[in-house]
Image (cartoon, rainbow, N blue to C red; front, side, top):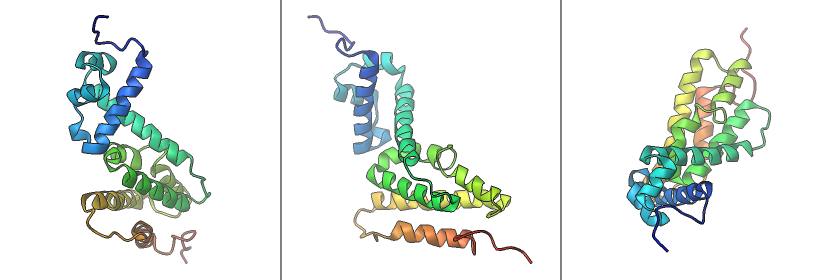
Length: 196
């Protein structure tokens, strides 16, 4: 049987999913900088022309992988039970993002900016709900957003960069509460205090 660049026993959808599995494995091991067409071809058993046919180019492959990883993360967050209070929901989302980031730090790097504070299923919506409920002022939203984003990134990236440190198990929880208390004094546990 003659050699072909195509995968005759798999349709294009199955081939794409198999290639994305390989690409995700490469990212997990060496980060997105190591994701090359050559590396994916070697791992997937397809040739570079077959990969170009499936994804167009490396950017198309990367976009497909980012979409897959972000979709997976959105599903994790959607599965959280919303407690009703937007601030409690912020806590739940932060915890889930830390879990995801620590389980797969290289995948987190692919989607953190996209997901964490801009997407509908990230932290933007509950922060806007806190504003709508009068618990934070309009001018505070961006400061809170950037502060939580920075803290979240540090809580995920530092243990990955410094595995030699005995990181405290309760570090994320305590750091979130300290920051929320600092950013929202008197309002973390309930409604904003009324002005006299």
